[in-house]
Image 1 (cartoon, rainbow, N blue to C red):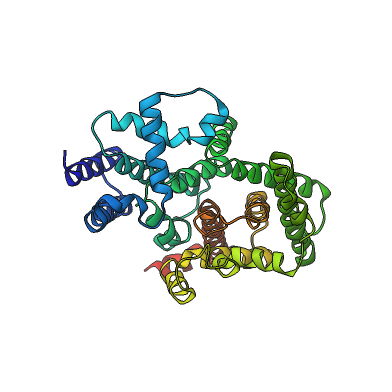
Image 2 (tube, helix red, strand yellow; image 1 turned 90 degrees about the vertical axis):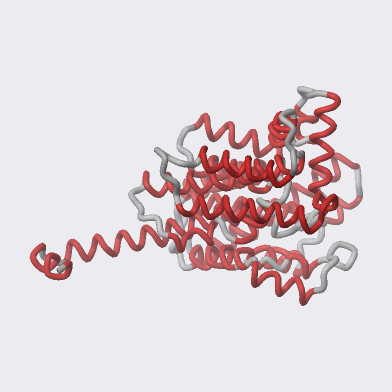
Length: 376
């Protein structure tokens, strides 16, 4: 079956699955159309090399699907993590129906983008918050949408941790953190660390001043560096771990700042970064969510507009995660996508809550007769 026919067929399945009572959300329909156009355009332009477009991790993912399709599934936790069973097993099943391997990996990404959007809408409705279209770029911006055109796992991870943070059902939280662990263990560790620290921090009942929050960030970042160093030392018996433990200096803090600004590439050499600095900076204009959402989230934290437990879990988890990956060559905006999504939801919820509270104050302060006049 030709690639174009497969793509249109899978897009049609998305339209059917995500339509409610025969009605289609305009945002969902627009995304499905753009996703279909995007994946077909990539295939047309790059052909057989589509699996190395942007990231050769796609080729790795395709290889994993082919391996488990050929040799079967080994029900072992280590193997499940290594071969990313959470994504590759569903992809392998779909390939049995004749679909292209890379295409079904992209299809799974698209499903998770739409499920994430639906979950956020449900979260807003359950909290009696008005959802506005301008919130969408904050939690589902160009970076996430672009990555859903690739056969990777970032959209899947974003959906899983959204469930872990937003869902109130403990069973779903457990399943979400297990799924996260099987796809990216240190991300699951960061979320659990953030949850534990937030619970302890809330019990202390300290005033959440700028100084207290800054200290919390530094401690969480240091903890991430320490855990990475110890883990590296234990797993590889490497002196790199010892070096990492002693390098909590200005450069380390700069790496933390670049994570919030989406400028991680400035801390790497040419052996890691292939594109020019100018081109990468220009790309940040297109993928504005790499810096707009994190910086907006951080500014609201320090202005103490975002101080719920959920906000602190996101902050501490992200900083700890940054501490872990800042000593590796894998510190990138793509790695941060799940946190960018979480931060976008937190910021959107803040704006929606403020808007609701403002309307309530106006309603309370204005006599009913005057409200009728204003409406007329």
